[in-house]
Amino acid sequence: MRRRATLARFVLDHSLLLLAGMIAAVIWANVDLPSYGLVTRPLHFLVNDVGMVFFFALAAKEVFEATLPGGPLASPRQALSPLAAAVGGMVAPAAIYVLLTSTIGPAELGRGWAIPCATDIAFSAMVARVIFPAGHPAIPFLLLLAIADDALGLIILAVFYPSGDLSLVALVSLLSAAMVVAYWLRRRNVRSFWPYVLFAGSLSWAALYWGGLHPSLALVPIVPFMPHGGPKRGVVDSTDSDHANTLKRFEHWWATPVQVVLLCFGLVNAGVPFGHLGPGTLFVLTALLVGKPVGILLFSLGARAMGASLPPGLRMAEVVVVGLAAAIGFTVALFFATVAFPAGPLLAEAKMGALLSFAAAPLAVLSARLVRRRPEPS
Image 1: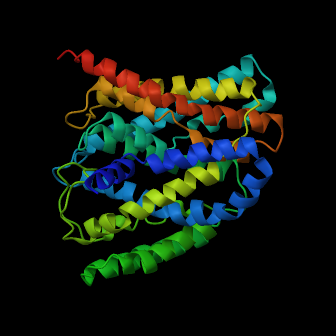
Image 2: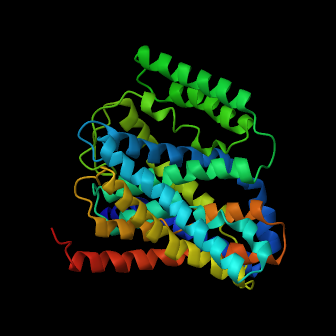
């Protein structure tokens, strides 16, 4: 019984259900694509637009606690580094992609320049948790970087790949109402997290949905309003048993259901049939595997030159490891590809590049081992 509990905890702590869903989706889509599409297509909205709200909420909680006094991202100088790194992790891959498409071609692939800008926060966080011990500042650094990356990605989608009209009125009015409700709940000292989720969270979800943006980040602006304590001993330390405040109870309640959501997320989104390799595949893959770590490292160095600092305990050599973990575009890059290209060979090639970006995971593990063997000189 104890072994089963230990195994279950290992699976949950390392997000292996997400990996299982991904593998099942890839096999299913390549064995029987019609049945895969028939089963998973109706689930996209429920999983991506509703279920993933709680994954991003838990990620936001970890970042928020890291910014509290005593946390690894408490200082503005420390927070500037991951934000600068996020920008670098988007600019460099896009530049490499545009360079490749403009010099090698075909020119039609140029429309997909935003695809390698993506970072799959779920897979990247999973890899970071495998590489770094609980409480290591690289994990909140990566989470903040990935969330900023996704936020900037939503702006790119709205500006350069609009799927409809962006309604600023709906976005601003409903989001303002959501934050007012969350503030009122906090002022009333409401200790249960459910009113924050059901009332403020629903308004926030509606704001993003009707405003023309993806609603999966709905609880991100609500999380800071939940009553909380100080930062955890380790920002993502799942062994913390202190559930005395609202935010920790929220984390404790949703920790296991979110893993089930991730299983469904991998199953619903990762079903890409093999067989379409081409220039688009190479361009997306190169831009992610090279551009992400290079851009994140260079912009982090630039931020340090401007007075920013890395979180205590995070070395610049480890930023390269973070950059490789962030190079997993995967499902987010798949989404970018579907809005960049119509159905056809270019879309298939780009999707294959996004899928194969999971190769960044073993590269990140290998680079982490090399970094540990070679201490950074003082």
